[in-house]
Length: 261
Image 1 (spheres, rainbow, N blue to C red):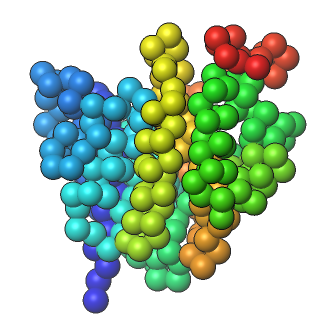
Image 2: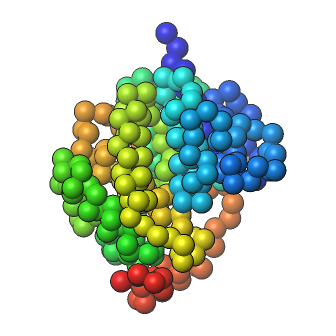
């Protein structure tokens, strides 16, 4: 029996995307922009958290798909970043149905290759780059409500210098349901304790930032689900010199936010 897989593309503006039944473009944050019409599936129908897109970012697409689609496997990518088997900036060469089927035949989850930070741990990188309070509240929430995940949390934050970032993956139905139940409950608990009203628009995206670290915490706690890594591709040019300069500046002086420590 053929597996029914759908990969959601989180989009907030018109942008070229793959023309394939495998992919479903989602207009994220539609509840916040009711007059915007991208002529694609909005994330504010059915059971949704579209109104929280400024904090949850692409996760509002994931939540919508989790709650409203009937699929054997569900994935998430971004309008500029895709899973691939190469680094070609070509929409015709992103992961296709045949490749996804082959990977899921022997594995439960498809992941992008890890992003390497080399000179600092995931936790120190986060603390240098972002407001620190949401991270600390997330850590405390896991300690108090999900102690089973504490050993993995310590490894991911304090020992590793790499992570599966960007909230892009493909998961079969059972692990997806378990992961999303866990993820969105923790983020909801964090939201109840954070006042982001004075954060910059960028730092208001803390739920999206936290979830990037939480994925590996969940994966490490659930070795019963097999994973496979593949390449990912960013469709636009990146200025690595400028990006590296920002990285070193944060490392030296820290994040300038109100609770950056």
